[in-house]
Every structure is written in C-alpha cells, then in structure tokens.
Image (cartoon, rainbow, N blue to C red; front, top):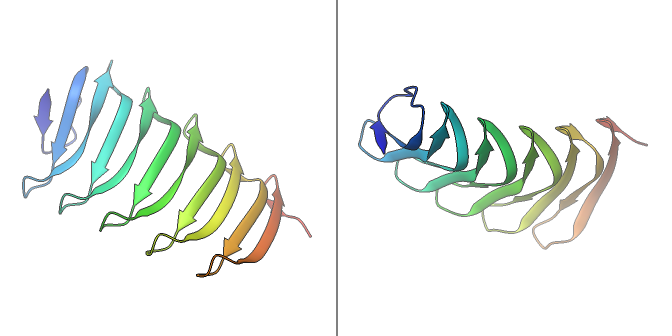
Length: 133
C-alpha cells in the first residue's frame, strides 16, 4: 500500500491519498500506473463523496455520488468514461428528483422531473442530444 498527500505516479497496488488534515481523500488500486477497480473519494470531513470502478483510468460501470452528509445525490453508469443509460438524481431528503438517460455521454431518450411529493411534473425527450418537440 502506498500513502500519499499529493498525486504521485504509483504503478501498482492500493493507493490512499490524504488531505492536509490527515483525512482520507481517495483510495483505490492502480495497475500499470492507471486506476483499476473500485475507487472511493471522500469529503475533507471523512464522509464518502463518490464510489465507482475504473478500468485503465476510465470510469466504467455503476457510480454513486453523495451529498456531504451522506445522502445519495445521484447514481448511474459509465461506459468508456461517458455517462450511459439511466441516471437518477435525488434531493437532500432522498426523494427522486430527476431521471435522465444518456448514450455515450449525450442526452438520449426520456428525461423526467418529479416534485417533492414524487409526482411527475415534466417530461422531455432527447435524440442525439437534441430536445424533441
């Protein structure tokens, strides 16, 4: 395991980076100098801020992002470092706020917005990043 305060080039193994206050900033594995496997990042006060897998330094598969007090903010997947498929966004109380679809990082398909009561309030459809009428 390698512990660093700065981003240093580490070729292989578990890497942990720390804030100046000693709190863990992020941790994960590197292989051949690139991030591989599960990586987690943390806020300066220690709360998890994001979690997901990287393959050769690129985001791949499911990712989750959190508010600084631990509540889930959004979740979705990446393919080759681009947003892919359904992404869900939540408000600070944990209620679903948005559902958005992407293909190769571009808006695609149905986008939905919900009010605090969970009622669908807005629907849009995108094709290749262009809002359809």
